[in-house]
Length: 129
Image: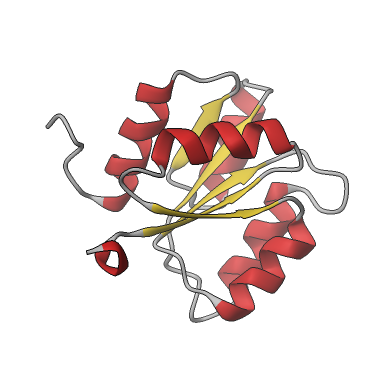
């Protein structure tokens, strides 16, 4: 059954944030982790996740730069992406919308908000619905 689970790639430069995402989602999804934009792009050369959770502010590349690269790759361009950011505001929302992201979640987030956003992006019912 484990190989039938959907795969999520979580990208964040903060180890604590990656652990939180993994602990919230690991019972229902296969969660792969990348702690930089470069690591995420390398992982995407080898795997094709069902969803990408992408931090916006990272030292090597921004989430928006990574998103541009994802959209350039034919095998990745249709994978839903949810941005995760510590900065909310109309400019972030507008930029996320321009990239055709599924939306964004503001850190710190409640685990239910994360799960609900993941289920919506994947078009599946949640564990409790």
